[in-house]
Length: 583
Ligand code: M6R
Image (cartoon, rainbow, N blue to C red; front, side, top):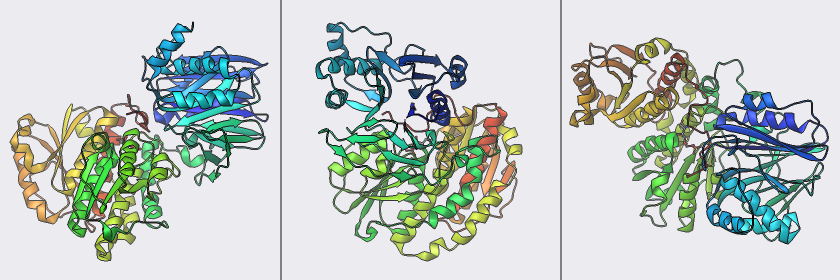
C-alpha cells in the first residue's frame, strides 16, 4: 500500500534520502511515485506513473535540498496516473497522504464554492486544498492542522510542507501508521520502519490526531488540544542489511531461509503480560489472508488439545456481524503488519464491547499491538516480500505455544528442540522438479483433511498470489460432492496427509482423483507408498502441534519455484500490497 518518506536536515541531500526511503518501501506495493523538495527556497514537485526507476530518471540527485517529502501511491481514488500521484500541492501547502479521507466529496463541494479547482480525482488533493482553505482563516499551521483533524473523516497519515515555514516539516495521522525518526542534525518521517533504517534506527510513533512539527534539531508533538506531549523513542532491533536481500534472488526466498531462526527466536522470546487463559470458555480468532489461515490451525489445535471451542473469522466479516461473546471470551487478532485495517477495526469493536483482546503481531508498536489488551510478538524480523512466509511460520509457532499453555500439556511440544534443524532440512529439498510438472497448468487443487486442510488453504493462497495460477483448496472428503467434475487428465492435485488417523481416508480421496487422471503430488510425513501418487514429498514427522511448521515449507517453496518459472514479480505481485491499510 502507499508509502511516505520525508526528510529535514543539514547533513544529507533530502532528495537522495527520500528516494532511498521510497525504494525501501517498494515491497508495500504501489503504482506511481513522487517527490516534493525545497531548493533555493522554492518548491519542486516531480511525479511519475509506474516504478520508482521512472521517477529516478526525472530527478537530479546533484541538486541540494534540505527539506522534502516523497510518496509511493497505490490507487484508491482515481486511476494510477501522474496527475493522481502524490505529492499534491495547493497554494501554500504540499502533502503526501496514506489512507482515505471519507468525506472528501463534501469537503470538495465547499472548496469548489470557494473558488478552488482540482487537477486530480484524489481525496488527497482535496485534503491539501482544505488545509490551505483553513489556513487562510487560522493563519497558524498547527491550529490549521488541528482543525483539519477534527473535520477529516476516515484514515490518514499526512506529510506536509508549508511554503510559509521552510524550517519545519509537519505530519499528522489518524489510523494510518506514521513514524518520526531521529537523526543527528536531521529528522525523518515515514510510514514504515524500513524507510529510515539506512540512516537511523531510532523512531517514535505518532498517535491518532497528534501533530508533529519537525525541524533539523527538534521534534515537537502536540495532542488534539495542541498541548505538547512527550513521546517514547524506540530502537529497531534489526539492521538495514537484514532488510536487504543478502544474496538471495528474492526476499521471499531469503525470508523462507530465515525460518529456522525465526522459529527459535519466537518460541524462546520472553513473553510478559499474558492473559490468564484458564478463565476463558471460548476463543475467537480474527485475521485476514494468511494470518486467518494460521487461525484455522490454531482452532484445530486448541480445540483438540485444550478442549475449548474456537471460532475463526475473517476480519472484514467479523467486524460487521453479530458476535456472541461474554466476559469469558478471548478474542485473538493475528497480523504480521499490525496495521491491517479490517483486523484493526474488528479489534476496536471487541474493545468497545469490553471483551479481552490478545494480538499476535510482528511489528512492535503497530496499531493492533497498541490497541490490544495483551500482545504476543512474533519474532520474524522485517518481512519484505508481499507473500508472507516467515511471519506465517512464526504465527503457527505461537499457536503451538498457546495450545500447550491452555492444555498445560508440555508433552505436546516434545519435539520443539529439533524443529529448527528439521525446518532447515525441509527447506533444502528440491522443489524445482515438482514445480516444473505444474507451472504451465491453469488450475491446481490442494486437498487435505483436518489440520492439513488449513495448510492447503495457505498453499493455495501462496500459489495464487505470486504465480497468478488459479488454485483451490478443498477438504479431501468434500471433493466428490461437486468439484471432482473439474478433475481431468493431468490436473495437478497437491494432496497433504500428515495425520495418521486420517491417512487412510485421505488416501481413498486421492485414489478418487487419481482414477480421473489427476497428476498427484503427495506431501506426507508417513512411510506409506503406493501407486496413488505421481510424486512424493516426504517431510519429517513431529508432534501434531508443530507439524504444520514443517508442512507449510514445501507449499511455500513450490509456490516460489512455480512463480519463478513463470517469470512473475515474486516479491511484488501485481495488485497486492504488503500492508493492507484500506478496508
Ligand atoms: O499484516 P497482516 O498479517 O494483517 O496481513 C494479512 C494479509 O493481508 C496477509 O496475510 C496476506 O494475505 C499475505 N499477502 C499473504 O501472503
